[in-house]
Structures are given as C-alpha cells and as structure tokens.
Length: 436
Ligand SMILES: Cc1cc2nc3c(=O)[nH]c(=O)nc-3n(C[C@H](O)[C@H](O)[C@H](O)COP(=O)(O)OP(=O)(O)OC[C@H]3O[C@@H](n4cnc5c(N)ncnc54)[C@H](O)[C@@H]3O)c2cc1C
Image (cartoon, rainbow, N blue to C red; front, side, top):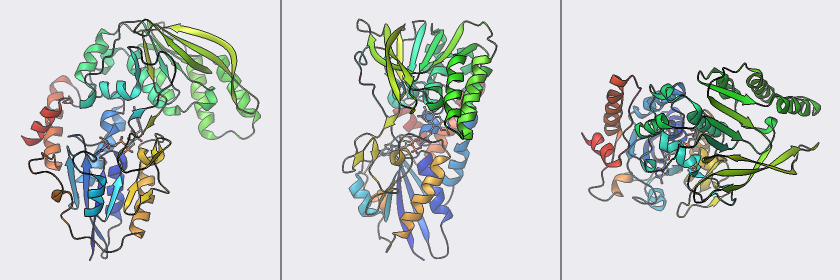
C-alpha cells in the first residue's frame, strides 16, 4: 500500500482542511503522511490572529483542527518558516506533494498622500496587534483622539470599527491581547466612521455581522436611511435581487431605523466616499474624501464634491495580498495557479490561492477540490524522511505535543480572569512554554 508524503505549509484553516481532505481520501490502496509546517510557534492562522475576540463562537472551529491533528498520520512542525528555515525547492524534493496554505498578510495600500503619517495604519497591523500575534506587539496605536476613520466596506473593516467603538469592558472576558486591552481601556475614541467607496449594494459586509451591530449595548450605530432606500430602488430596477444582497440591505435598513440609545459611543457607516488625502503635521489630523455616485450602469463616478473628517486615527481595511515567496510566481496579490496547481508537485489553497475572500468554511470545499487534483497527479511515492532531513541540527520545532502545552498554559492563565485564554505574545516565551 503506497504512502505518499505531503507537506502543508501554513497551519491556518486552509492547511487543516487540506489535511482533512487527505485523511478522508485514504483507502486500502492509498495512505498519506502529512507534515504541517508553520512559521509561528502556534497554529490556527487567522482563527487565532484574525477573527475578532468578541466573536468567540467562530473560533470553536479550532476543535475541528485539533481533531485533524490527532490523527496518527499528522505531524505539526511549528516554529519553522518556509523560505527561511527550509526552502520550497527542498520540500518539493523530499515530499510527493507540497501544498502552500500561507494565507495573505500584506495589507493593500490606498496609495494616497499622507498614508505614511503616524497613526495611519493598516488592518494588517491593527488586527494582529489586538489579537496578540507575536510579530505585532510593537505596533504603535494612539487612541487619544475622539474620532477614528476606517476605510473599507467588508467584515474586516467592521471588526476593526467594532473593536474601536465597543465599551472595552465588553472585551474583558475575551482573549484580546493584554497590551491592546490596556490601551483600549484608556481610549478616548467615541466616534468611529467606516467609509466605503461604493454604494450599500456593493458592500461586502455579510448580514449576520450587520445584524449584530444594533445589539451593541454601549454603542449607537448609524447608517443614512436615505442611502439604503436609494440603493434598494437601484437594485430592484435591475430585476431579480439575490437573497444575500436583499438580506444585507434589509440588515442595513434595520440599523438605520433602529432606535438610538443616546450613548456616547458612535459607529457610523458611510457609503460612496473615496479617500483623497490624509492631512496632518507628522500625525493624522484629518482625512479628505471625494463624494461618489452610482450611475445607471452601476459604475461609480465622482460627483466632484469633497468633504473632510477631523480624526486622529485612520485604519485601512481594503484587502490583503501575499508577500514575496522566493521561487513562487505571484500575480494580482495571489500565488499564480490554475485550479490550485502552481507547478509540478506544488499546489496552493486558501487565501494564498483565491485572495482574501470567503469565510472560514469556504476554505474547506476549496481545499477538497485541490486535494482531488493532487491525488490524480500522484505517481510513485518518494523515499525520504521529509522535513527531518532538512532542518539544521538544534532547530527547535514545536510539535503537536509542544503546541498542546502552550494551549493548556494559555487556557489556564485565562481561567481566573474569566477569559477563554490569555495569549502569550513573546516568541521566546511561547517556545519555552512548548518545551516545558
Ligand atoms: C481580520 C479578519 C477577521 C476574520 N474574521 C472571520 C470570521 O469572523 N469568520 C470567518 O468565517 N472568517 C473570518 N475571516 C476569514 C478567515 O480568517 C480566512 O478565510 C482564513 O483564515 C484563510 O485561511 P488560510 O489558511 O488561507 O490563511 P491564514 O489563516 O492566514 O493561515 C496562513 C498560515 O500560514 C502561516 N505562514 C505564512 N507564511 C508561512 C511560511 N513562510 N512558512 C510557514 N508558515 C507560514 C501563517 O503564520 C498562518 O498561520 C477573517 C479574516 C480576517 C483577516
């Protein structure tokens, strides 16, 4: 019975769903040895460092990941960075197939004047800062002004805005990074404005997230009802309206019509606004927008009018792209691929393949399709010890047992504080917890 060796690079949802699809494809004629390689000392990708701390239910998918990791044909090699500790070329020589599931972590830029000012940040910095990613503890976030502007009209923009607009006491029972929670408690921000370039009908917020907004206890949420009604007229005029879009517009209407509590914290969603320039002497003080309109053919054009918002913080959440990966072709922010195939015995799944779209579950069907292709292209299994032959002697790997020690330690630290866990942020301490 042939056993094929597969290396999965990146321990996020796409990586785990790839392992699961391989496990589910095993038969009397075909088995797999799966080695998952992760640069951080901790797995779970954006489930740990992206998903908002006030949405703990979403993170329960990690139980599925841990079940996959318990299978006897699965090994975790965390604290191993592909491109630094081992190369893709070396992995391709040792494994029958290599699957890249490295996500996309570089925040897209606006490309406008003033973007480099202090306190003009990307969600790609701000999110891992509040989620205790060990590379982002040093991000300087100044929350001393009363107004923050978030650019973008997707769920990441909404997460960022909610984190800024919530009463921080609501975050006390969550796994928000300790350093971020301390700053959020001191925050003077009371007014958070999300600005999207296109109309309400084009926004990529999803309706469950929109429907959660009026439930915020200490924050009033505003959307201009007039804008939603105009969008509803526009979409009805096009004929059949998709259920998802109808639900989204309905959720926005509910927000617009919802009775306000009269509290000090405000979150507002504005549409049809293009950021033109961020102003300030050294630090963000104001952002200038152009006002857009939706033409009959659904095109967005400028009205030529502008307005500006005085603010001390701008966070851009307009998407992510993959970084440079030596030897791997990258195009339009994704690893170049056809149906997940990059080159001979090299595949890609998840955000690195598709770009930053879809929910966690989207990565499951995507990984399953790529695994079908991978299996169809397998020939003779290679004889090798896999990654063990490649790492320098003394390289400290965090394996599944080591990760379980880190996990248990974090959960234990959270218990007396009523938190699901307190995440360790120091890279060296994480490694020593895994060693203990
Ligand atoms: C802020 C934010 C909030 C989100 N919230 C939700 C939500 O509430 N619900 C939902 O369904 N979806 C949410 N998503 C989307 C979801 O997180 C993604 O669909 C999913 O994480 C993509 O999985 P992935 O495995 O492709 O990438 P990732 O989750 O990014 O995993 C990639 C992994 O690869 C590792 N890696 C990178 N480079 C290397 C290397 N060179 N060597 C080894 N390892 C490497 C990374 O450290 C990481 O662990 C959110 C996304 C973001 C950004």
